Image: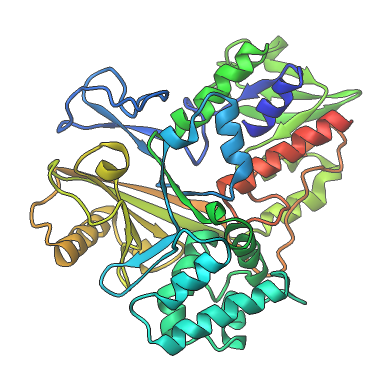
Length: 446
């Protein structure tokens, strides 16, 4: 969608083929029948609703997402297509709160002083450990956040004498939140890229932005209107079955059920940007002999899961903060949708990366989360319902020295967009947007 918006802005007629019924990919709204919810509109000024008009339905995000202030291109695009950042998000200063175990909050000081003061004043660690964390950040800054050679995050932390408590309470939660990869597998250089952009430029870059709207409404639905107003087409429930190189262009073969297909479900284009998930992209590209190396790179990617457990409690149930972490629990991060978006009583527990939670049935996992909420916060009432959304291939495993496929393939008119393609960032919304914008730039240059 980022690529399509950038091309539409330049007057290029684009057609977007979306295999699903709704836009957004892994960052989309999912309709849920909420028998406890009143059928009222929740419309922040200037934005779309979190609740559709019909019946007792609720739109849940396909996993809770958090943006950082340094996600400049994503935030710019949201505003370009009609959003309002201050209205569409709850903006919080950088903070990390592991309930009852560790807490730090960045004061409103210039970067990187705000981070250093947050570390030195953190609760839950001895002063010597906090001083070690501050020294570590200063050492990274002196090195311009660049390593002579990549290594795992675990190895980097050991090199800089970060204690077990620091690792467990600070660096491990930050790494998993940023890279969705365990520290013993995660690329230290990619983590440093995120720390560089979030913590080293301006204080606002480290702000945490929690969306008040569901993700379909936040960007892709607005982007679709932007594209259509500029002569583009949006085709949902329209999967691509094959990509066929032709002289002077590329032919797409669609399902016969697609609206407005070309002759016999075939349509020719001068350029194609393949923004499918990596496994789907690999299968589409596999028949094209010149793309053998690209397919091999995609096939070599490992993947990491993200589980989100939504729980509907009575409206008076709330958490101490809009977002709060738990230490050594199944639940890693909890989001209070009442505090964030006025969806009172709706809580979301996020569990990132691989772990023993994958061995549990969804009912068992939900019961573990319910028990943790009771033990940590005294929430004795059972939820009216729960829903587990398991993205088993949510992101690529962000390992050291990982070779990710470039946006430009060996076929001149065919490009790849996605958070898994070459770039400085891990699998994030900003990484996906930057990839799409790079594809659009390559099309305009050709």
